[in-house]
Amino acid sequence: MARILVIDDQDGMRRSLGILLRREGYSVEEAANGEEAIAHLGSGHFDLVITDLKMSPGTGLDVLYYILERHPLTDVIIMTGYGTVDSAVLAMKLGAFDYITKPFKNEEILHRVRKSLAHTEAVREIGASRKGPEPWNGEVPIFGESKAIKTMVAMMRKIAKVDLTVLITGETGTGKTLVAKTIHGLSMRAKHPFVSVNCAAVPEYLLESELFGHTKGAFTGALLDRKGLFEEADGGTLFLDEIGAMPHPMQAKLLDVLQDHTIRRVGSNKHKEVDVRIITATNRDLEQAVQNGKFRQDLYYRIKVTRIHIPPLRERLEDISILARHFLDNFKSEVHRPDLTLSADALDFLLHYDYPGNVRELLNIITSAGAIASGSLIEVPDLSLSFTNRLFDVPGEAREGVEPGTLEEWEKDIILKSIRKNDHNLGKVCSELRISRTTLWRKMNKYGIG
Image (cartoon, rainbow, N blue to C red):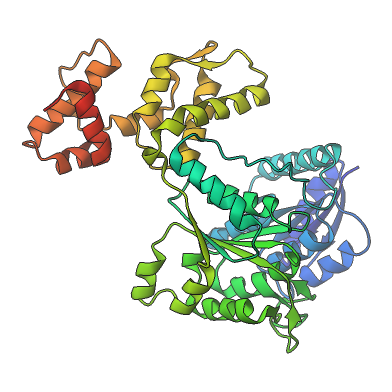
């Protein structure tokens, strides 16, 4: 019988939800706030905790933090009003399983409960409770034959062995997190934790506690001492993604840690030494941010001791087919479809797209195409609708009267009509067709358009 803890400071809501769950055959305990909940959690294991977000003493986030540290196999579902949905989404980013907005229908909450308990059972079956990082096999899981990628991988192997801070730059979707994990895995710290946080996803008022931890009573709802991510990563690597979004006050505190190698929990006067390698990443122009006064110059030079830039996918076309086949191979293994393959036309179609979402977008395109393909051969029409719409998303009048015999004829006709319509202003053509100037020139050369 699954054991569930329901936490809500509204007696009627808490009791009615408890009755509903007991009728479904679950063992249910109730708590009126975070403080009571922690007392219940200390008495034994719960399979699921359903908690309101806004309570006192002890909020839903305080309960979530406690469970993540002390009961990592217990799922948490957050209940919230419409006015605090953003906080519920934040809770999911921090580790909650799901959230539901009040008021909700009985079947809605029961569906989420069943889904959570099924997830918990699956996690146990695959042994996800084991601690410690996965052993690294020494391979670099970054695919490509372009000169830019080979140079980048060689650089990663070198700097992984040197315990310096690293700044990873690149557009959204290029794989900055994968690069950070690989550097950690190739380093002498590989047997220790790799801990990551997205600085843009955590509100400013929570970021200090998230990074440095807090002591019991440091602020309203701080019911227990809590480790921060620096302490969690001690001996290993802390990856600060979207470092450019870090608020200015936190930049100063991070600089102090980089200089002194010590942290101080919120509410404490004691400093603790930490041994952590810092890897940061951003898709912003930090040099421009420094000039605009939005990023500290001294911190910028601290984090860019070594720098790796990941080129966008459109600048390494020779890698597209390699990545596409790699993603398809992974997909085939997951869905047990060894017969799936890309047609020559589909691959050619992929080679003539700009990928504003970079590698992540290519992954989504391949996954979607593999899922909807009716046969073993993935054809052009199987490619994601959003992908083809972006490539040819032009005003209706540009398509009037067009009956192309092939994809190439259609594409050429669209480009020619757009060029004529915009009086040969290629900047306007690029804007209308939503493609870069490089792609436009490549297509014009392909079709002999002067």
